[in-house]
Length: 129
View (cartoon, helix red, strand yellow):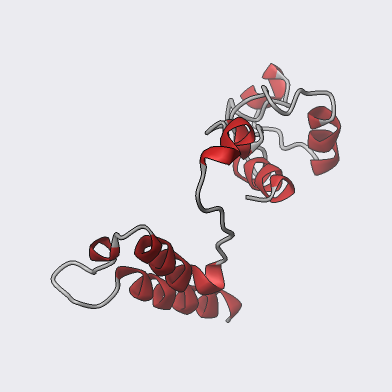
């Protein structure tokens, strides 16, 4: 996942609105108690002072969760998946691993991930209305 997108997602989830989430690390204790939102600029200023490899798990580089940064040579496949093609991407990945049998909807012979693609497309259309 893109590191900037991950940081923005964590900020939006932990530090906006009337949230008093303890994982909004850049807030003071008083601000958390009073549910005071902070600006994105403040979050950026804070993250620039942190060691991005060891900071709170919500803001840490994703590659440091699974040691990908050290173990990339052990992987046989590395890919990028996008919401628009998630079903096809997941089916392809499962097939390349010999796990086609996992890609089935319960009580159906239809691919599981194909159903997910339809759901994502439907949900996206609804959000655009």
